[in-house]
Amino acid sequence: MRARSLLARRSARMGAGSTSALSEGQTDAESPTKSPAPSVAEPGRSVMTPLEPSPRRSGLILHPTSLPGRFGLGDLGPEARRFVDVLSATGQQLWQILPLGPVHEEWFSPYAAYSAFAGNPLLLSPEVLCEQGLLSADALEEAPPSCLERVDFGQAIELKWRLLAKASQAFFRRAPASLRHQFEQFQHEAREWLDDYALYMAIRQGQGRAWRRWEEGLRRREPGALEAARRQLAEDVLHQQYLQFEFHRQWGALKTYANSRGVRILGDVSIYVSQNSADVWAHREYFQLSPETFAPAVESGTPPDGVFSTEGQRWGMPVYDWQRLAQEEYRWWAARLRQSFERFDHVRLDHFGGFESYWAIPSGSPAREGRWAPGPGKAFFDAMRRQLGPLPVVVEDLGFITPAMRELRDAFGFPGMCVLQYAFKQTPDNPHLPYKCRPGCVIYTGTHDTNTAMGWFQAASAPEQRAALEYLGGPPPGALHWALIRQAWSSVAQWSLAPLQDVMGLGAGARMNHPGTAGPLNWSWRFRWEQLPDEVLAQLALLTKTYGRLPIAS
Image 1 (cartoon, rainbow, N blue to C red):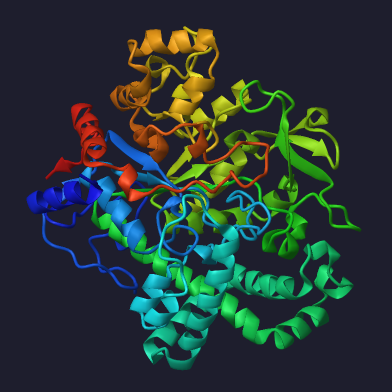
Image 2 (spheres, rainbow, N blue to C red; image 1 turned 30 degrees about the horizontal axis):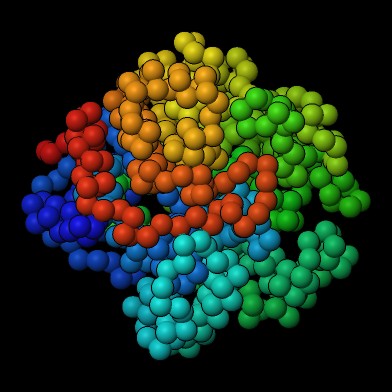
């Protein structure tokens, strides 16, 4: 029996929808019980007993690209809503995703996007566009009938750009006046980032190379050159703005649906942005760049840490000019976090330690030759609280973490992370052991940057395997993933999460990312619904109930 049958039985008992209470820091206007903003193809809901969020919550990690679907990669359409139904049916209250920005066509990392604000148009659902009348059913037949086991970015780019161009043309030809008004309102409200992003993408498609190699006037953002580009590329700019409007609508509809089923979205904000991004092109004054070439004068990364890399990591992204940002009360960052708090219920701040001190690598040098430089520290988060109010964040405090970084985390009461795959080295003092985790933290079996639970155990050293088996009570090798999930779900941590791959018991071939590498196996894993049989979902639901992580009936 498959996932659909468990959902059907659960729906028969409880109804198809649920109402979650306001999340921390969420205003009444954002409540899913209120009338949502205009959305697309909102599914019907049936009445059920309202559920209040439990203080103890659990959830799964799955990026939308990993969902099944016909269009080369997963998207925000029907399969995403079906996954929400699976989360709700098994009592999961959290769906953690990776950053949603538009990815580069070479390495496709969600952590190196063309914009810190824009959404990835490849995540737009052609099926939702068809429901809106912007694509014909015949147009959807261009897609292959089956779901590929890995994301085919080449296929997705070719197919989706063609379909999105048709939808964009249809929108501007025949969208009703009310919808055009919504588009114009979106243009106005998002203008601080949308105008530069849309122009950047339009120019980039014509230039075909990194912005610092564009013609001089565009590279240096001379007003005359920018105005000429806006005139010449007006249609392309408008198309890019429409894609962001459609992303805003489709994502908003999906989040509203998730909240109605008692599922909160835990988003992800990477600390750094790509050098080849609209943000660096438009706001180069906020980054440490060469004044002549605009290449990074100092690059971001991490020192050797014994966890992710013995040589350290050089990410190639520019670091911030924190002094310049401080002069403007970190206005750019406040806008970025404000949008993130509107887009998600909670936000994971990637590489939190970089806000206290960051590893600065001279351009072109190995990571090990970097040095520590002071970050903005407490002043940054004080400014964010003044401008934004409560900060519903989880901080990624893994790898090389200093006492000062922990002090900054604790000064603001931010939840940190424990990862069970790191727990069985240097025992018994390892801070990732479940009994060492603080009640306010978030515990994981693994993350997008680790191996799967089964892959980790198979690759672990003999002493690490022995330590894990002793701690976990000697589970059969084929059930080790469930033993890790049980430890996470039973821990004192307020939230517990696992990658979907761990619930499925998949091996190393299902790993999402290998940090410090680039290749076709990164960011490309997808699942199939037949990999989620009823007994797997029933086991997840049982553990969630047993360890007090179900929503509470009011």
